[in-house]
Length: 315
Image 1 (spheres, helix red, strand yellow):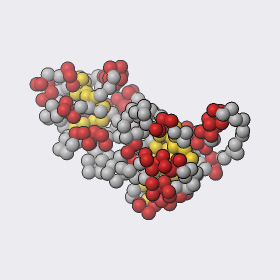
Image 2 (cartoon, rainbow, N blue to C red):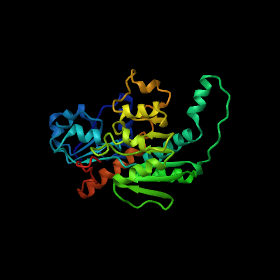
Image 3 (cartoon, rainbow, N blue to C red):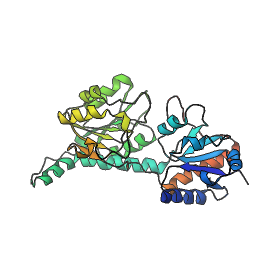
Image 4 (cartoon, one colour):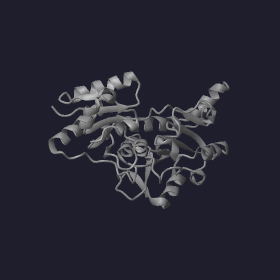
């Protein structure tokens, strides 16, 4: 029998039970135990930890960790909280997560393409007025980020008939149907050409505050923003100023610097903002457990740690 795998996370009891059940079904040969149930001697034997926003103090009480498997795709908080010198962190790369994120990008792109915010405002004033229809082929969508999630989103958007461009921090191959932009000089070009900008970037030192007043000024007048990346990528004050000035027509925000979004945040009540409670790319216990099981079995068989996060880059 191998040493136990520790499960650490800041989840409510039902969420924890769901993940433990899914992991147990996917890895029946392993013993997966919540951290709190492990004795000090058992903690000293743990080589693998499966985590979901864990308490860093608890992780520190696992002195012989070989690697840490995150249940989330985003790991910037984990990298920050655990600090330098921690065991290698493996982020979740789940095809189902990519599918659900692409689905969300398409859904909220349709929301903006079909002028749903304007119709919502008309309903509030009992205004019956049909707006001109814009077919997808006349709407330019610019994706910021073209990793696993961005690539899946680009494919769905292209399939739906939208004109798609993508920006990456360094040049990389893109599908023939996608217009490529890269580097510092490429971002203003993408923003200027996009009717809807969709942020799917990870949070790093380079992307923190990336969408600031200067970048909003570079956007096509009347363009819209969807942020499904991380809240701190967007300068909230600059965004509100751009919305108030009419430079940006609407913002769909699913991620925030502080979550849950505080009740007194002006974003809740801003007429140009749609607030979502971090729902664009949920982790599905069953599919996540299958990915984790594959990583654990490969490690048991070979001793090789799965591809880990580059701590310096933050993802």
